[in-house]
Length: 311
Length: 311
Ligand SMILES: [Zn+2]
Ligand SMILES: [Zn+2]
Image (cartoon, rainbow over all chains, first blue to last red; front, side, top):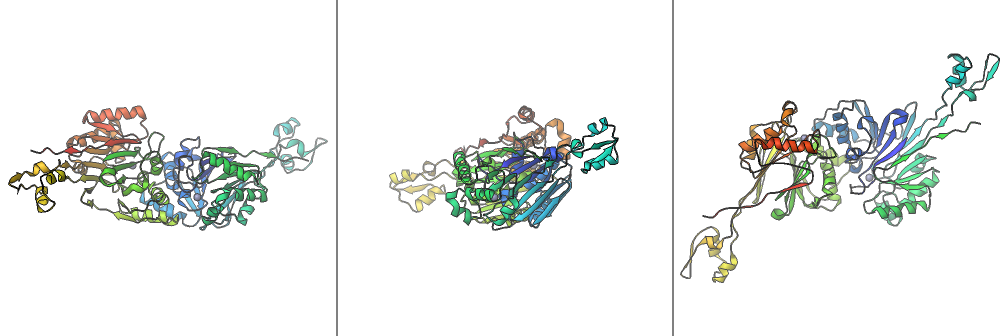
């Protein structure tokens, strides 16, 4: 589970930062990549990575500002052109369907895969046996969602070799041990702990759309392993941030601290800040939340698995 | 008058060539830039040039395939964001209006300048005292236009200094000389030739949308100073070219020869050809039309003024 930043800028593309897109790489988990937002030239950024467009399974759009969606028709078209044939689902605010339909229709683009567009409301927008994705509305002047991606806890895998060495054949005993029951076998008491691998605690990544500080940020970010929070402006530009419905570095840090996240990553940085300016931004956030980093285009952050202590 | 190639690829962006866009730089002529097509990330390509988006006065779209239009909403938005406030007119096939309206509407983009979208038919689509732009339908499976940009001939400017040195005051005599009449003044016969600068012949640039070979190509290109013609495929892939409504190198060369153009520039090159492959493409076209070059991204071609011989 890795987060790969395809674009980390705000509003307009610049040489240092492209407009917003984030890839959540779930290659080990499900052989798939999920995109969060898709600003113009996201597919161009992907050309410089090892991400295969055909692996993109889901796209979550936070809000419909151009710097978050104008790359979507091109990405979806190229994915088809390059042989992608598995289904894709795109989630996002109302209006997304019209935009994609018209864009694909006028350009006579016929996708070779099934595209589903889901215009979402607050709540659980996706769930399967591995993940739950929950969305909440933020505060950005138009509907802007934050997404909380929760990986479900995984039980340890059964140590089949060890059971077979004792002569236990596949069948009801396997099931009992899997479910944590002690079992009598050949006059021996089998303790399930001895035959189960270590369970893994599911990870939590929170990826927010553009927003002013608000309660939904805290709810979505609660105890996340990684919070990806916009920081369009520095603290001294907090009036601008408020006026344009954005957040500052320190506001992002405050949210991270309140929500007790493990790590904060700032992104959606205004093009007014150069590389040095970016360094100052991250220092500002660290005054309130030390575990802060700042995203750069083509940067990857890994979210490691935490083993659950067995007592 | 310079042609600047912002994107020279076909179908999908690749590292070597971005999707299609061509800037016709008319800075000396009218302080303006005209764009022909605007594939995704055209505004990103512009970041690497000295073209100012605010200078873009007109955009001519050849056809609505995604690789020719998906960069337009972003370019128009950024032009506004970056302070562009002069009017822009976009010309192109039916459907363009819906596409732009929806794209700007869902993204809540309010342009700070007046945008006019003109859905064109064949014929003269623009004319003022400097230029005439004529469009004709090509053969591409969906409506694809070629544009013939004709600069009007310019009469030589009046040599006012020389007239004043003879004591001729501004008035009717100036007008007569401007219109080529001989004039008696103070017992002297003034020959208009002596008091007029050299007239300039207008230049002709023909920029085509994607097309199979067809008569309209020849009509649009007739005696052009520069013909910009797609050459998506090499001669050996002529069946593919036909199937996908494209042209080969040799077909482009044939058209250039038949239309008696001065120079041919190949563009819209399939990503199957690498840099060396491109060299082979241009050699193929030169077998039928020697004055051929091949476009590269960020390449500029100047079209020089030809003085009319005065006899
Ligand atoms: Zn944004
Ligand atoms: Zn094309």
